Length: 125
Image (cartoon, rainbow, N blue to C red; front, side):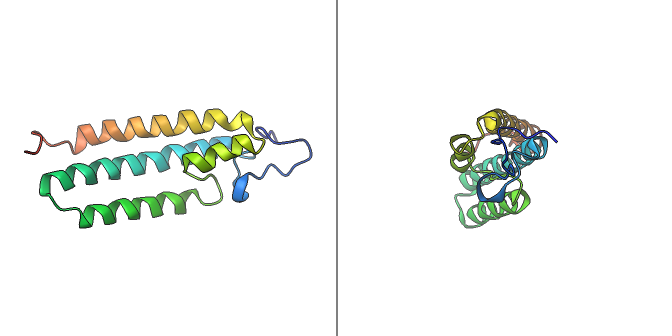
């Protein structure tokens, strides 16, 4: 089994027990999906909040999206840029592509989906 960026003789477990070194594709998909969820819900909530001038339920939606993303990612990756770059500093430099490419693509997908599915016809006044 190939490990990405793991030191020789290590178990390849990343920070907080994540499996980035052991399963880079799984970690990339998790980062992609987690970022897509956060960007989609965040964009939707921000636009809805601006349109209704109310932010209580929109804030709750964002908090629940964060909880969902972190629960889905638990044990696989961290879905947090600062902690993710900690992997690189802790000795997994080969995993850097994962934290640059997967979240970027997830964010782009979420923005396109929002634009195609939920974007209001006219901007709020």
